[in-house]
Image 1 (tube, rainbow, N blue to C red):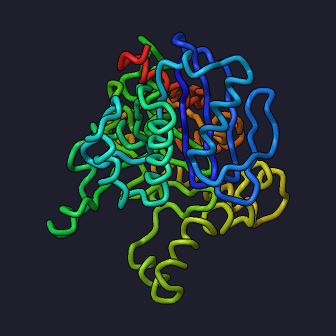
Image 2 (cartoon, rainbow, N blue to C red; image 1 turned 90 degrees about the vertical axis):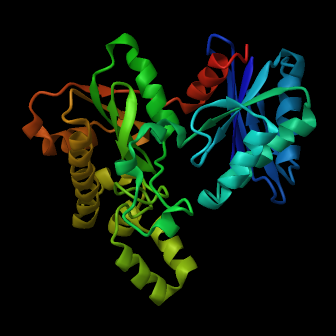
Length: 353
């Protein structure tokens, strides 16, 4: 079996899969580093002590053992890593060089890669002989052409890695697998959740995406602003300071900033002009960015929606597609987001079992 690990700053989410990608069990430890952590895994639902990621993963392995699944039954552990930089552009088995590459990409994802590394190192300490694999949230977009990834800034700044990377790559990779041999030639894919993006997928490869150097760019999101003029960002930094401006753009903006809530269900249920404007803004800018992606593909043959909002909100899908009705009768698909299964699939493809 393959254990998929998604390590965050104060939580570790896990999912256990058989070699045929059947999910056996899933759960998490939350509150890591706090006075009282909590494990919710299978029949295990209790408070625990988890001062760090190592203790949390040890508790997860002990919980599996208590429920009849021993470490001997695990053939590999596969990790979600947010950022692979320019060098880690496909799933791979974790080696010292890969760890060094993840560390090198940490300045590009300072809130995520250190936690992903903590999970990798914790498994290495608990089970030194366990094969470990990594799947990168940026890797699917490595096929974008240079003209799509380069910012028109001085050479010295581009040399520091300031360019478009794109995110939600595991979600888009999973969408491609679900079409099997019926994959449309030009597929416009929306991942709509608290984080939201779109991707132009031409012949199974990403050729453009809405997120850029960070996950802030592009569509209106739950708490992120989406696309905003760089000078407006600098103005906010002058007024609030850089750290506070960053917090506002990432935590207080988007649907929350416009409508007062970052939960699309609450906004759709609210009968207020403010809530309606937030919803309209979300759909309008999703369609505006879709036009750019369609240009990158030279047209569109089908549209796919995934993510919590994309999967579950028909009104949002319909409103976005109403902006795109000039395209004619384009087939619309809804794909359940299962990033953990994509990570397990990557590990299996690499020979984990």
